[in-house]
Amino acid sequence: MESRYGQLSHLSIYAYLLLCLAWAILSGTGCQSSAPNSEQKRTIAVKTETGPVHSIRLLTSPVLFNLDGQPGPDGLKARIYALRNLTPKAVPISEGILEVIIYDGDSNRNQKDTPRQVWSYSGSVLDRQMIQTSIGYGYDFTLIIDKTTPLPSKLSVMARLTQNDGASISAKPVSISIEP
Image 1 (tube, rainbow, N blue to C red):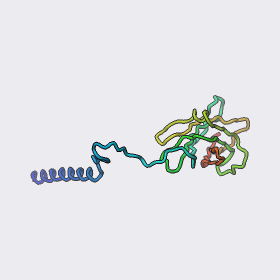
Image 2: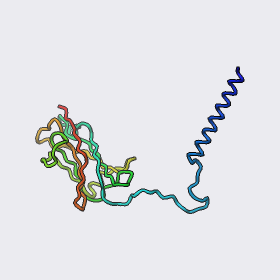
Image 3: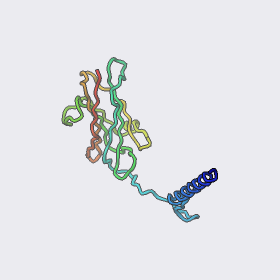
Image 4: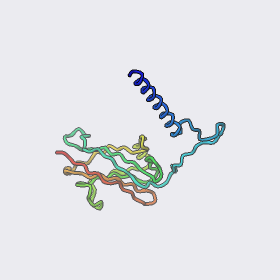
């Protein structure tokens, strides 16, 4: 009986090694993309040149924070990413004005309503907010909300990029509930 199990064990080890060898061959491990002494370099087919931003994405904190030391929430964190077609990662914003806009109420509100507050960034001011992450370039903001009028139970946060050619791109608005 022992020899039978011993043979079975050796057979499974050989089968496993054969399977690993086949996987390595099929996956291209050890393949060379050019001749051994060639000066040819491999190029990546990704467009990274500058150009217009095609869309922006807005991420916010789910709740407001107390940033001024006074009772009650009054600030939020926002991160904005700019995307260009055919570029796999978020890109820096090289032109235009980026705005973060807050409206009272739900995010389905009409953008023609008067905003509660607007922050505008361009040029070197915007460059100071830029960060580089694993998914590309982004812009981090810590925003303190003006509380001269009482805060409603819900706020809408929106981001808009107006490029130098006048084209305006908006991110999908985000609603934030304000706890009493």
